[in-house]
Amino acid sequence: MKLLVCGGAGFIGSTFARQRLLEHGDEVTVLDKLTYAGREENLRDVAGRDGYSFLRGAIEEPEAVAAAIAAGRPEAIVNFAAETHVDRSIAEPDAFVRTHALGTYVLLEAAREHGLAYLQVSTDEVYGSIELGTFTEESPLRPSSPYSATKTGADLLVQSYFHTYGLPATICRGSNNYGPYQYPEKLIPLMILNALHGDPLPVYGDGMQVRNWIHASDFARAIGHVLEHGRHGEVYNAGGPDEEANIEVVRRIIELTGASESLIEHVADRPGHDRRYSLSSEKVRALGWEPRVRFQEGLEETVRWYRENRWWWEPIRSGEYREYYARQYGRALQG
Ligand code: NAD
Ligand code: TYD
Image 1 (cartoon, rainbow, N blue to C red):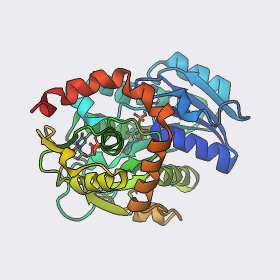
Image 2: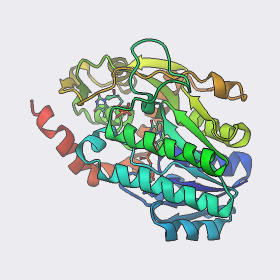
Image 3: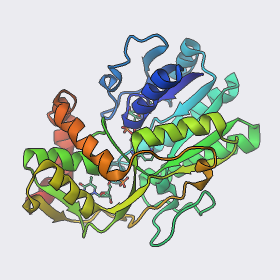
Image 4: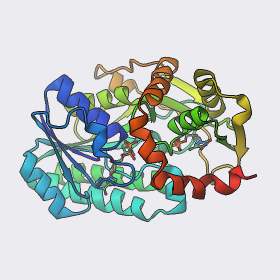
């Protein structure tokens, strides 16, 4: 296939682009704004390869999208491009509204104009929090944060383009991802790097919030599966095989890094914090997909990757991330 992968320089988008290039022989054009979270280095192992090209541009800019379509002549758009951190959406929601609402709209219009298939990458957070049981694709949408609310808006717009214009669109909603190349603002890489440096491990509230962890390679394969076999107009959930309370995740990381338990610091909870996410993936499993990586094994591999790839995270830790970290955690960690 020939794909336009928007947001392909980010964590999951680069995992997907690499998978499609190397394992499926697809042609991949990446369009990415290169925000603080996007880095061309995430795809340095495929740079220069036949069938891969990169363009810098924002999805909310019609000219950038038109240029990417003219360059790559894709059959389908796969949209990963997003602002993805809940804490940043609480502090500064502006870019979330712009990218998720306006950006998705511009991509949908381009898909309509050029007769392209469209896949929207979405999240379990659109369903809100669930104390018991699991969310299915039929569960009501009850997003809690500006991140999840704007992702929900984007999903609804995608569905409206299917219903109104017959756009061949699908949506794939993933649970919490982890693995190599994840920006260290997120729980797992943040805790790994802090543990390796002997820095405090800031656990929000009691740490008993539960997340359903999926390895990014499994989520990327689920997205490929939906692209190839999904029914247009449908939503497919892709959850990981294991659920874990945050405090247990942190304890596992402490064990794998040899850090001290005394680094754990319970800090003020996130406002509006969702207590538990849990996703039923039966519908995408019926298409022949299943997750391959169990959490403990994936976490061990991820810790190893961060240990062995300082080239990747050292420039991040000394750049914009430092200021973000000071703003987000400075006061809390000073007690
Ligand atoms: P990420 O923050 O690592 O990457 C996002 C990428 O999008 C970056 O490369 C960034 O430069 C790019 N981008 C941001 N705004 C853009 C714009 N306006 N135009 C073009 N590019 C832009 O995020 P990720 O974790 O890889 O998430 C990718 C997608 O998967 C998102 O849509 C996210 O909502 C979804 N998702 C993520 C998770 C998770 O746990 N990380 C779980 C489920 C779904
Ligand atoms: P995060 O990685 O931000 O993903 P999401 O909010 O999309 O689930 O957070 C995962 C969980 O970890 C969430 O319950 C918030 C918690 N958390 C902490 O306790 N401390 C932290 O420093 C971070 C970043 C997250």
